[in-house]
Length: 263
Image (cartoon, rainbow, N blue to C red):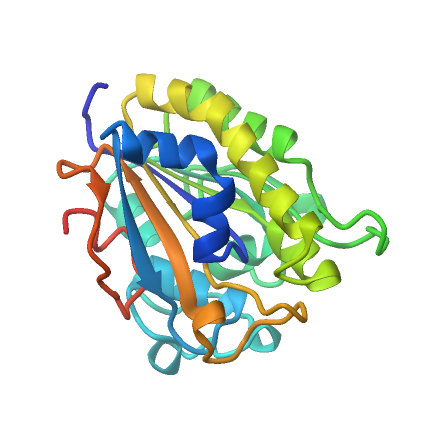
């Protein structure tokens, strides 16, 4: 694998640590074959998506960056990975939920102008965003993993971003409906892993360091936001880490894999 400083961060929303170990066979194969390092991380509080998205990209805890709920989502006013990359002349991209557009590009998110972005003046210069609007309770995956990963690989092929963030929301959606111990939840984690197995080799060939993590876990009742271990323990895979294998448990309260990729 070539090494040129380019990074992909994959956030598998709502993926519990143990579910990742049990269901993500391709990621575990990379660890077992000494091509990746797996760590166990602990999420900041509250274990809600928007606060943790901002933590992952700023290194600040929610009580410090101020986004403490999904219901007070706003544009970030903190230095973050996207703004730092842009200021240093690097290209950024994201295939993600519209929350990320609101956080780093435009608040409010207006689909007609913000769903697809090709603008070198924005923090996320190349963006493909989706939302939950218009999906019924029987069709809650928001976007297929196949389409999401293809969008990400398409942007790599076209734009060669230095930092690409991919956000999969399907495990979170399935977990809310069926619970974190359900067969449906486990199967969805397997499906995300299966799509990663089809795209990660291409990303590696293109010279990317690939980091894969989650924002929070899930309770059996289909909830998150609290302080239980099952909500806080999250996986972190670093493909290309200089010390591959399974790391000793080391809880990183900042929950910023970009900040910890050399640990």
